[in-house]
Length: 101
Image (cartoon, rainbow, N blue to C red; front, side, top):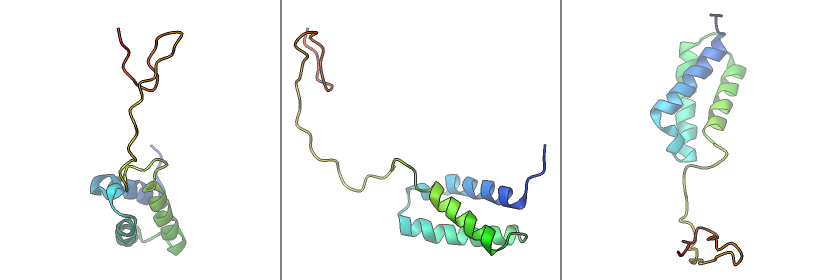
């Protein structure tokens, strides 16, 4: 197995910490504070990393915490009226409405 560069090892360790600590469900401000502290810890573990690499590490960690589809629902969804739509020709239920026998 090829030897990993310090940046690659630090990134992998950061992702591992993100998964284990549950920071994905935290508020964005808390994520930022957590990420700052964790990158400071990683700076101690990987002294070969410079300020530029540590800044990149924090940026990639914050991006990792912002999924394309949010896991957090800030507001309840609006109420949807029940729809009992049935396709006239096929008799198939539309929009999840139950089909009558």
